[in-house]
Length: 154
Image (cartoon, rainbow, N blue to C red; front, side, top):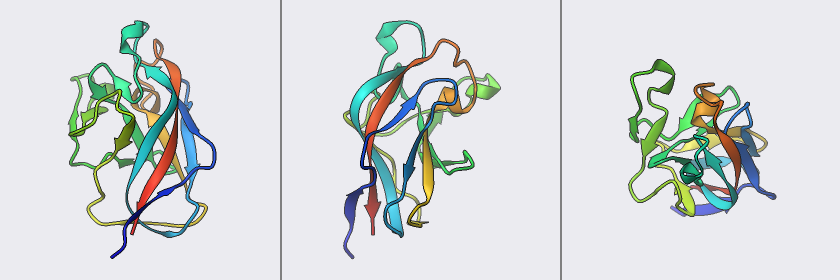
């Protein structure tokens, strides 16, 4: 079995922290993908007006980036990520931790799917900052992160 990372985008994919400013990437090659990863190119996102919360992928010490299908259903991180959040319903399970990655890591590699995800050429996926996706406490968010997208193809 041959497994290879394939770059998906031709120009950086950017997503913001509020106002439905998700990024979109389009699958260039049909196949089966074990997972996706983002490689930071520029920018930052922020969950608060305070500049010390600026990061590549999250809020304070928590990751806060979801990959969704085009219907905004989360596909990554998988359910085996270490999710947490507060008791406020809209903030429940929107931040998480992945071993080996922080909010300022140069790359964010998600856990593998339990079985490879079949993808079609031209299929679109979205990258969301989680508070933006949930329309929850995003009024003080700002910034935009741009990244390269990679798929781990079988």
